[in-house]
Each structure stands twice: as C-alpha cells, then as structure tokens.
Amino acid sequence: MAQQLWDISPPIHSASPVFPGDTPYSQQWCATISPDCPVNVSAITLSPHVGAHADAPLHYAADGAAIGEVDLATFLGPCRVIHAIAPGPLLLWQHLEHAISADLPPRVLVRTYAQAPTGWDGDLAAYAPETVERLADLGVRLIGIDTASIDPASSKTLDSHQVIRRRGLRVLENLVLDAVPAGDYELIALPLKLTQADASPVRAVLRALP
Image (cartoon, rainbow, N blue to C red; front, side, top):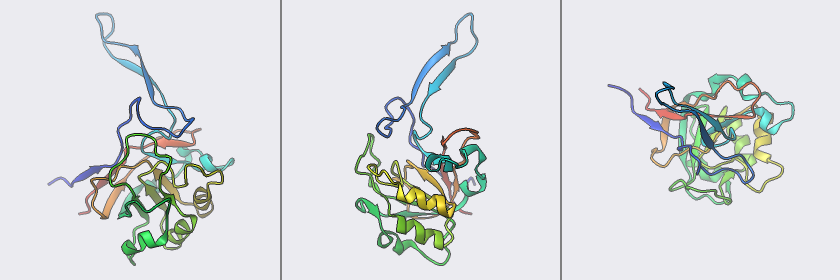
C-alpha cells in the first residue's frame, strides 16, 4: 500500500499573495498548439518567494550562498508538525513546548493558521529569535512556517533570519498545513538548482512514516 501524502504547497497563480513590492506570478504564452505548432510553451515571471519556498543564505546575507549551492539533505527527512494556532505576532517557546520531546526530529514545521489566508497577511505570525535559538540548541536544522516569513512583515532587522544565518539552519515559508494533523512525518521539499537566486519555489509534501 502506498504511503499517504500531504501536499503542503499552496497553488501558484496570478492572484497568489506576495510580499508588498515583490514580483507576483505572471505567465504568457510564447507558442500555442495550432496546425503550425505541435506544443504549448509559456514564459513565467515570479519572485522565487512566491508560494512555498526555501530561502537561501543569499537572501539575508550579502555574501551568502545561492539556493543552488545549498545542501539538499536538510530539505529531505523526518520532521515534526507542531500546531500553534493564532499565537500572536511571535512564536514563543511556550507555544511549542507541548510538542518538544527527546526524540525531536531535525526539522520542525509550525502551523499558525486555522485556515490559510488567500491574500496578503501583514499581521502574520513569525518566530521569535530566541525560539529559533532554542530549536537550534536541540539539533533542529530546518524550520518551517505556514506564513510568508519567519520574521514579522514589518521587520527591518530580520532577527530570526539572522539567527538561522548564524546557526546554519534552513527555512521553508508559505506552507499550507491546514489539513495536516500534528505529529511526525517525512518531509520532501527540494529547491531548484538556481545558481544565482536568493530562494527557490518548492513542491513541499509530507509522507506518512512507515
């Protein structure tokens, strides 16, 4: 029997929300099927932060690595989904500690929305930097969230991004965890090998553990 999959990637289209000022998804047809053309071919334009995506160190450090240079191993393997619905502006340790145990996997995804929004949420929940520090101390190598950023939308210092830079963590943002029960899974969320980009879209899925 095939293992159950949960698709935790939002759909990407022209109405997909983006950070204010970022490049939305757009598509045009370069060729269409006709008597003179056997195929449809399109061109797309988008920020690599549209939809579910992995940030590269280049996103938050001028000398950071592009996403195509980042080790893929962190984006594949056991993870824990933690529910912390409506935690307020910051995910504090008290919002997560109910799900922290000695067997914590090296990947943690946090659900903050009861239902993922369809538009931009300027009041999104983000990680408190001290929460990221404590997760790193426990061996976590990747953190994820169902909002557009691990930092508040208004932040100019990106304190939590700076923690993952300093501690060598990876991050996934814009996940959709509405239908995922809290618990442990296998995460598969591989970024594209974009050799100059500050992020990459991912098709993030969770697979039931055997």
